Image (cartoon, rainbow, N blue to C red):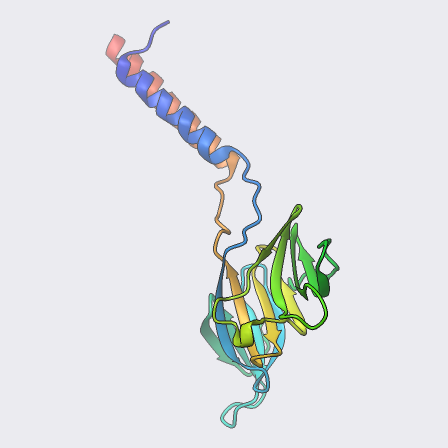
Length: 208
């Protein structure tokens, strides 16, 4: 059985499309965008969601016990009612980091991030661990050349981080830039089946 050239081209494109997007992607990103959310004395961390929503309790004069929510560094809501969501703050851990002194660490869904240093009272840094690779993910504008995390408050399942920098006395939200949605293989298979079926019907119509 042979297919017309146009039909064969459609089948080839569908095959490449399915292979490209249905294949599993195993990665733990080390690229972050940092957002300064405000001074530690004005905000208290409340919790973080699996979608990256970071919630703080603020007590300005105009709104006592306000719950302030941030998404990708932008304030999206303020309410006197606590938001309802499932907390995804990660768990305390001590990542394996040969040569580094680990101050505080968090783990979640394969991500490992910690604050630490390389000796006696050197600059503290914020680092991620991927296998045996340790990457300094501190922002370039770290105050005093260091960026500690005490307390290290949250690491969610998509790699986003909330931390209190004791040197600059600011809350920071670090958003994982390489967390990309991956199409579901089942959805792609359904799409491919539909396209192949359409191509087959077109071939039969041409034949008759």
